Structures are given as structure tokens and as C-alpha cells.
Length: 582
Image (cartoon, rainbow, N blue to C red; front, side, top):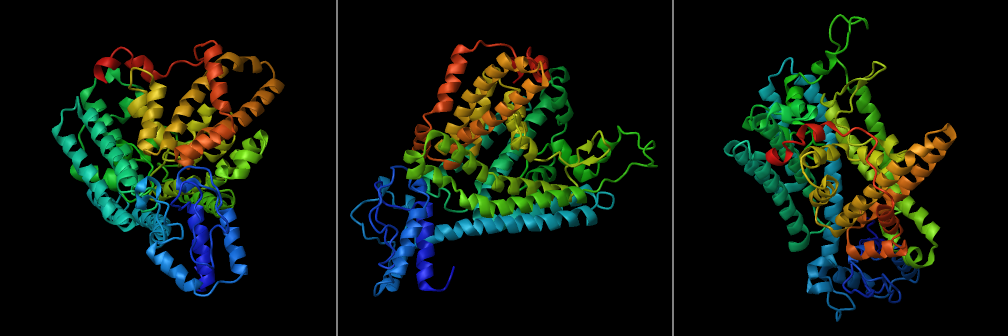
């Protein structure tokens, strides 16, 4: 921020308006001194959570006009005084709900902005340090010359240090949850270990979500420690179910994947801590399987995936030692491009534009449809950045090798959380979801979809929403997702086979389904990033709830046909014993 008072006032004013700080539900005149008025006249804004009122562009323009007129006498002093005390001109209007902390003013707003910036900087710094530490870990603590106990201990110590550096005293929530669930692991019978662990872990996560947002009024304005807590929750429940599969169920009741991942010996305390708190995944994940992680620590991770290949025919006299360097460099390039897109595209088309008066009331339907797609595309780079960087960190440590492809190339995508090409070219919602947040989808499948006896699709979406948090927007997204998924499945099963008779029809089908999928995902995912009820309803009303209506009509009037593919293995193996064992 510039040291010039006028520029400082302008920057603070625009940032406050972009964050939506206000203390009136009807468009407050928010002054930061006579030289910087956020609204030269009272601007009426649509009612809703302060966080999403307007894009802030008009308020920034008003501030610039006020500056060109020149600051009034004592404006700097008054602006600083109001900023420090939180006083405003319109003091007779009480804050929404009478809770001052929900709508920070003055120094509180500055502190909130500082916390947001500090959190982002800490995240990037920790991940960059983790990247260098991962290279060091792979080279100097190679399993061939270092014991697994030392590798477990170093990975845990670095992870604990990083999480404390990033989140301070908030990190105690992770340690409390880990210790509670380890107590359940060692004291509970294997027949109930998955149930108790699941309810404790998800219950603690939900309590933290609720308290952080609604009790302490932190919202998204302070350090968000829920990210690592969500990853740890995934790992805790994954391990609990895998221990239950290995020690509490018969082999014939397991699917092939469940049998492969089943844990037949409870982990030691050091193994448990290392799996949950290692520096490679503590900040941004991804979730992984306990047996894969232990194999990596012990040096068996790569070799077991190379044994199925005849390397002598390829000119090797022994098993090769695949290097992750090429994969890491490629992923770092994707990370860099994603960062540049975030700094340009995302800033140009912020999600708050969807609540602008022009979008809601003046643009025609097709313009809204296209603009919604552009804004939601602009929201993706930050996810691409975080997930790809996390994948690169794990690969740099030597973790994430998935085998050899049909061309003989080494693949390092075991822990990849997304496939950007398949996401952007997806021709169905199913393909899109299979390649977005892949490890979370795998977790939902392993702990919910394959195990619940009734309504697996609905319950999986509900669990996903609950895991993400308690913002209403999450539930709009996932409940809408259930509706659209069922409708898309009905359309696919009734009509897809008609378009496979010729290449031309198939191309036409692919183009139409691609456009439909991309527009549908934009419609479904918008509440996920808008978070609150009012802007979501405003958006959907401006779109005439078109996808909800179409999906309902499809479900009501299209005949239900069985899916063309063979049922998945978990359904056939577990159908007899599902209710009794799970």
C-alpha cells in the first residue's frame, strides 16, 4: 500500500466495498472521511449478506472521483480516526442482527484484510518450503540408507512445524482430533471402529465449521484452519474403514479395491501421526491410502508397481529407478500458468459480478448464461494452482508413482487431484466429477457410496456438502447436483445410443453434450463460491431456475432405464452382506 494518504484511503475504501463491509441492509453511505466516500450518493443495493453486495467497481469509481475533487480540510485526520474507531456517518442504523462483529469496520476491516493476505502468503511459503524439503527428503533420506522410523519421524516433525507456522494456535484442533481418533483406534473393537471414528471426526469437523463461522463470527475473514482439518478428517476415516475391512470383515465380502487397501495390522502411534501429519500433504492434501503411504516410507512404493513389466525385453538388467523430476517440472509449469490466470482472469471477473445490477436486471438471458460461464471459469485457476502444487510436492518426495502406461512412460498421477484437459473437455457431468477433486471423490466413494444400502447418490452428495462446511451455498450446489445428476443419467440412458450410428452424429452429440455440461457445471457450482442464500437466490431467479425446471421435467417424464454398463464390483460382492456388515 502506498504511503500517500490519499492513495491509502482509496485502497482501503475500494477493498472494503469489494469485501462488502456494510452495516445496513439497504445500501449504507459508508464514509471514510470527506476525501473518500464509498458512495457519493446513497446507492441502493440488493438485500443479502454484506459479503456479496456488488462488485465494488462503482464504489471504487466514486472514490476516484472524490479524490479528483481534492480532499476536504482535515479529511486525512478524520479518515484515520474513523478507520481506527470504526465510526461512520450513518451511525443511527444498527448492524444486521445487532452483531457488530459480522460487519467489521475501520481497524477490524484492516485486520481482516491483513489476515487474508497473511494466510495466502503463509500457504504459498509453506508449500514452497515443502517442495524443497521434499527433494531433500527423497535424496538424503532415501529408504535405501535411512530407516523407516527416521523417515516417519522427520516427515511428522516437518508437518507439525508447517501447520503451526501457517495457522498458529488454531493448529491445536488438528492435534486434538488426531489424538482422539487414535484413542478410538486402539480401544474400540474392529467391528465398530469405522462407525465411531467417522462420527467423531465428522462431528468435530462440523463443530469447528459452525463455531468458526456462526459463533465466533470468523467467517472467511481470518485464518482458515478448516482446510487441513478437512484433509485430516478424510485420512482418519479412510484408515478407520480400511482397518475395519482388514480386521472386521470377511475377504469374500470385500471388493477387489477394498481387499487391496485393507489394513490387517493396526498402525503404531508413529505411523499414525506420520500418515496424518506428514509435511507433504498436511497443508493442501491430497488424501491418500495408508498402505500406499507406508509402502512409500519403506521404499516399496515404486518397486511393487514395476514388477509386472518385463524389463529385460526393454534393455534393463534390473528394476529401473523412475525419477519424478520431469513430472514435478511439468506440474510446476501448470502451477505457474494457473497463478498467472488467477492474477489476471480471476481478478477481472470476480464472482461478485454475478450480483451486479447489470447482470441481475439488465442483461438478457443468453448474456447471463455466457457471463456466468466466464465468471465460473475464472474461479478455477486457484484450485488448479493449489492442487497441482500439492501434487508436485508429493512427487518431489518420491510419492505418487502409479506405474507404467501403454507407451512405457513412467506415470506420477497416483495422487493427482484433477485432470485439467478432461475437465475442460468433459461431455457429461459424470466425466467432469471424475476428474475434479479426484482424491475427495475417491474418499466419498470408499466411505459412503459403496457402503450405504439406500440412496447412495443422494447420501454421497450430502456427505460431501457436510464435509465442505456449513455455508448454505454448499448445500445449494450439492442438492442441485443430485437433481442434475439424476436427470443427466436419465437422458444418457434414453438417448445416447441413438447417436452412435454414425461419426457425424457422434460429433454433434459430443459438441452439444460438452456445451451442456460446461453450462450446467457453472450453474451448479455458482452457489459453492457465493456461499450465502440471498445472492444464490438472486442468481437463480435471474436465470429463471432453468436447470432446476428442466431437470425436474426430465426426471418426471423420461422413462427410467437401467444403465448400460455392468454394475460395479462392490455392488455385486457386498449386496448380500451389506446391511449386516456395514
